[in-house]
Image (tube, rainbow, N blue to C red; front, side, top):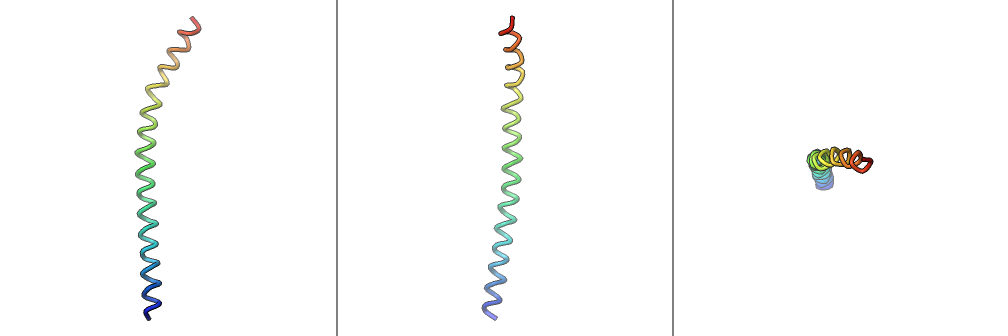
Length: 56
């Protein structure tokens, strides 16, 4: 009885931890991608402007 209770408790904790980390990872990845894209997008026009400037 006690063994089954401990096993169910451990499985529940494991499930909770896994779901928590999956949700956290997805949220962090979304935020990271948004920041990453914001950082990259302003630099792209700069590079395209510099390239013709260097050619001229």
